Image (cartoon, helix red, strand yellow):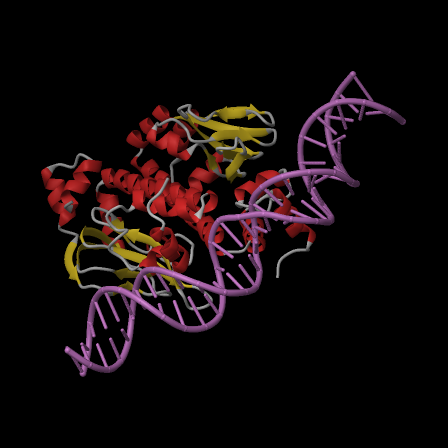
Length: 190
Length: 190
DNA sequence: TACACTATTTGATTTAAGTCAAAAGAAAAA
DNA sequence: TTTTTCTTTTGACTTAAATCAAATAGTGTA
């Protein structure tokens, strides 16, 4: 999904507005395993994923990587807390496959919010959509067994589940990779 | 905290704008245990809590009430998924103490978003704030022991932790009430 | 005050998932 | 192709928290 399709799907921008907005996004090709933001840095960019995928993760007390979220095609990717609050990031932001991203800085985005109030709507909608998804994950994590959580993962990120290392998914789902391996072995849900 | 203080703290509305906006909120006194929204209903109202508190919960397969969120003074309360998507609510919305709420309908709110683009900013900010909080809970639930999760609860809702039945808190934290009772018994954190 | 009802605590037992350790399989590098 | 390195699987054992069951403690009210 291209970024202009995405924008138009949320808000009916005119052709002129769209051109102006798109001019503020910079296309970037990023190769696998590249880290976009490190823990402690202030994340100054919002990325739209046109192709590829990424994840956010952090290092727990034991130094183990814990995946916080996956970002697939057609989504915005950033260190949410850091970008919006402009505070040091709790997370690393990493690209998991060679990807094509569209990047915009916080100041440019704020300028667009100011210039086009319609953009605020887009921001609000992207934010509530993310909120809904996080709430879904929360419910999965909080009340479901390891096996059900894996089924949730398959429905939420069907395209991603088989493209990333098992360990990344296990930590995303709050279980060990041994457990996830055993779940996969015992066939799919039901 | 009053609703006008809250609004002004987020966006610098003029006195006139503020009056107009406030006119669309209707003050309601709601008594303890009243249910504002039921599972399956479409939630048409957003409430600002001036005094008192509420919670959202749902019934799991076994018919047990599972608390999803607490709403304290100075926060917006609603069935998030239902209100924003205008879809049948997954949750009940209940008032836990005699409360004073300010209510606005979805259509009035949308009209305000349209009339005052500044409102969009308020919506976006309220939404990202909620997102941050949900992410915090998620991290607590996903990676912490029952005892640490209780400490998280005390920090997130210090004023609420001792005002609601233990069972409500236990289900919010994804543990049984027996476990929570044992945690409380063994003194506070560390 | 006593009764009924609800909430909390305590005890005994079970279990889902974690931990630790090592083997097997894949992918990358030499 | 062989070696090295990383990823996934398997096995044995442990444990935090759940479950089941019952006893207290509180609260409202007749």
